[in-house]
Image (cartoon, rainbow, N blue to C red):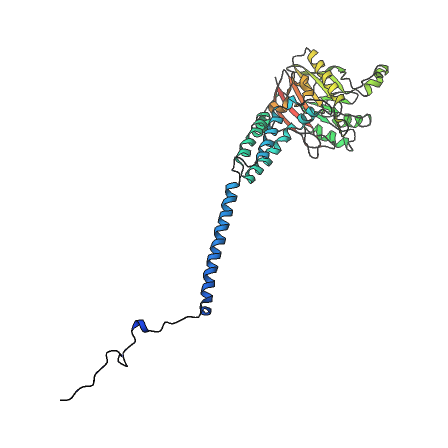
Length: 386
């Protein structure tokens, strides 16, 4: 019997696979993984930066004032503008007459409203937007009615007034344009002795009647009577009483006359009040004009005529408190029956209406500014009815 060789169970067969526990563990060099580790660190760094930027952005948003807190300066300016326009009559007329100066250019303060509105929108300020409503409402309350055309057709008489300018280089051309205006009664102020004959000749065909006293005159298609000068205290001071009547008449700046109409007599005043000056030292100098305005108001108040018209260059806007005595008795044809502000001076770029047609006892039905002539003022016209 053959004996088989003993087989040891301690040694595995030569061709048997190694058990898992004895498999060699593959070691990877750290240098081979450097790129992967760096990429991970980069992602972590970028994420941290994003988080930090988000925190800073949130902090800025949280610290930024809300829409009701932004634009406080704009809101304050809007309130001040509204109060300035609403309370213009309370601005004292002390040194430099600031109250009269503001009132002369009061309509132009409305230009600040769209500027403040645009700034409030740009700042996204709710408080400023609400505050801008104050000056807007005040301005519309003062001047909104002038934006509507209130003129009507018809009328019994057409009146016109023009400061023809003492320095006018073409008085003949000015006369032709005025003659073609269609006015029944035409008042001219700032007439010079040299140009008087030119106007009389140029207007003779259109107007049968006329009268000139000093530097003011009236041309009419209807008869005139009772013409006399009106003392508006132009020549003022201790030396005034020493001058002769002829000397005072040469510089006379106001007259009163009566126009005979088929509806009855119409009293007409023509006036050219003293000029105003704006100087760094004196401010808004209005002493001569204000004195004339008071004298004119006294003359109109003492006039018993039921129908009165005032035509002239008053060198001031009717919003100016200096004319309170006049405007309390007479109505502006432009305010009642015009369209817009009717600015008349300076002719190249009018910024204020200082040429006026004011009435009492008659109804204005239309008011307009006529085309420019050779003067530095624009002429004005108005239709009236009984």
